[in-house]
Image (cartoon, rainbow, N blue to C red):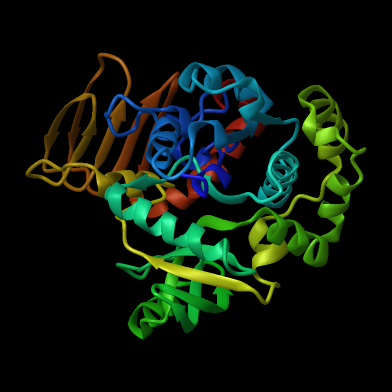
Length: 363
């Protein structure tokens, strides 16, 4: 129990989830939506599953200030000091740096897991075992650990990690990181057996990540090191400092800032039924299908000669389609999207085009 008291979880939930437009909107992004019909949103599910590994009082939510009301509404059991509001979006490295300085001020011996708020885990007991093994490793090694997912297909939407020599159990040294590959390279990765999907879930001791940031991304580390003594021990002074200093941080991901540069990077090969739920196709894959391989998200649909589609329409509207194959049909808050699943990577561009033409009305 004493060891568990030094374990913390940082849940990042500041993104706007534009690839799930028009369901996911700037005012209520996908992490605040019950996509799976469980009665719990993606954020709430992320919170629920970590409770066995981390005490409730050691959970920290990092989000955008515009989502203060949503976080407090969905996780009312958290204290105000457990919810950190970024005054500006600056990618994951500044976000994680703030969390590390915040937690270190409270507990210099702390270790922490950093996880996005929009992942789906289907085997939670296996997840807890993997997380516990990860904590045990980073508490006894000077290590930055990421969780690697065994690939099931040549996916071009994820980054990949090439594993090196085994260290202990399912943990290995990282040989290389590779950004999203094209299809042919993804097929090579899959066939080799040496590459795992980069889950974006990390574990480390707070001192190890702070030192890594100081060495490999000193511009970001310097912002937090510049805080007057005692800043992170006082909620009011911390808030004042962050509101002034955070917007000036370099916008950079933790992968570019640290993980691709540091020498003490390891990967734990995990198997717990993971999906990052980043796209409509990912939701389609997770959802039950009817005999025509269509998915309906809480809506009424009549289909003719139509297969492989996902329908997500809010309200009482009946959807009737004929001759549609492998499409996304999504209707919410004044926006109807009809898009081939094969073109869903274009949805971000569509959101930007709508913003340019119509302002933020449909954002």
